[in-house]
Length: 222
Image (cartoon, rainbow, N blue to C red):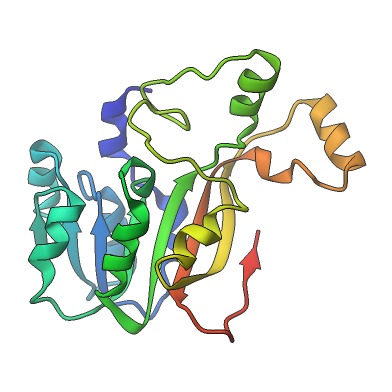
């Protein structure tokens, strides 16, 4: 899969994680806008703002969003000062591309409504093919797309993801694996013997839903 495929993905597997009471939505790294097109098709009346740095993708997305800012996310956030707070900020495989995703999440938090949330999909560095290549093959080879995309600057696991959000004053209330694959039978057997120690290795990505930090919100893991 070439890098250009990123811009045409609808990411429909992330749609169910956007709470149904979200009507003002900001999507960073929105590509051609196919995710938001799917969300608007399901929920008429959403007001959506998109951020996309690449001109060709942004040009296509502009027809879907109510407002489109063509700039890197760090610069685009400065242009949103006049916007009302958002109920939800979506980041589909974006944060791992940033030099300082911790700071960006802090800035995003300032644009959230009091009960707002961040819905973010991030690659899982413990995905089995990556583990296999590293520990059995001794390889860490960057690729054009996927978990080891050569433009990825930050890497996370299911266990390290909550800290990413906590440092921004957000609390992960849902962390769910998506795009699962089957473990090889020997690893699946080992996984059963170790009481699910490698369950997380089945997932190419995790979706995190994070709210303003409060001590009363439960965490749901899948």
